[in-house]
Image (cartoon, rainbow, N blue to C red; front, top):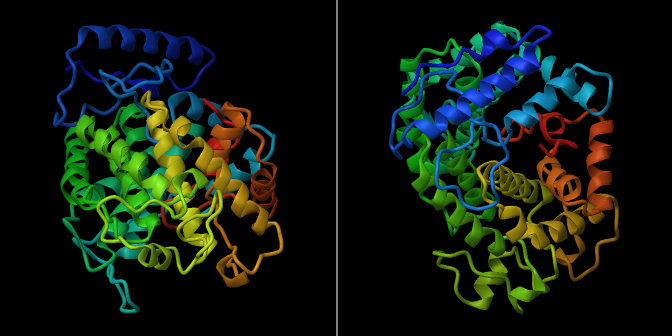
Length: 427
């Protein structure tokens, strides 16, 4: 394995673009000469450069593209330019991230060996702290890339090192969902730092990779077909993110397969038949059980989600996770958007109309909807409207209203700063 390219030493100065081009060309040549990394290979040295050319739209046969968990290098470069400019909504989104508690250089991690998260009202242990710390690591990774301030790089690494030295399990009923929420943020942060920063010691990178493989991946790869769909979609999001960081083709393929099976069982289309599809592997069998799983809904229309009659907050989690999976797969040469595009367009349009105040018919959730949704649609909108040019005006309006209200940030779970990273940023 070749030694690390010291990318960060080239991050400033008038010749930065030319230097990055030479680095990319050298990395591309190196990739041709270097044997493929086996599935369970240890983490590469910090700062190893990977080619950034756009991947083909089919399942890759070679190495993963890095950075390539949710955001590509090309997108990160665009974020850097926009964040330091005056154009909106990126200027405000950057300031929101920079000035948040997550972005403070005095942020202190609070790792624990066993994260215990019950499903009931009993107090957990380490649940909020783990989610916050993972988002903080991702926040500082983004701030490092945008500002070239190595203090942010050190803080991101410090937070990740603190957890990889301590955590060894998740317990109680919410263990899988908790591992998914934190795991996807950890993988995003680690992906940026491993491939853009030259001072994360290789031993610590390997320790962090081991943490993801042994503590998080078994939880999130197990599936949860009988749970509400946002669970399994978020678990799939984490599985794919971790797989890319680990260069694990088998886990990546499992995530792709689960996406293809689970998304059609969460967002309904009339072509599915009279009833929605059943989650593969679940115990849901009869028509009555399907309707109960869809919170008592009896009439199904294009765009309805399994949790629509529960609340839009959880539908938002499902939309966000679906977008994360498809976006990461896109960066790795797999176009899951094309396979699920009609469902996703219908789901965005259906829910956005009611968020904007459309009257709720009596046949829909007994005429009552809880329409509060978080910052969950930026990734999907970026692809559908930005790359494909498909107009979804109500969904676009909802996103714009959220940005104007000064809420372009994070849900505190697994969605963070996506107005900044993906609004109008096709990459």
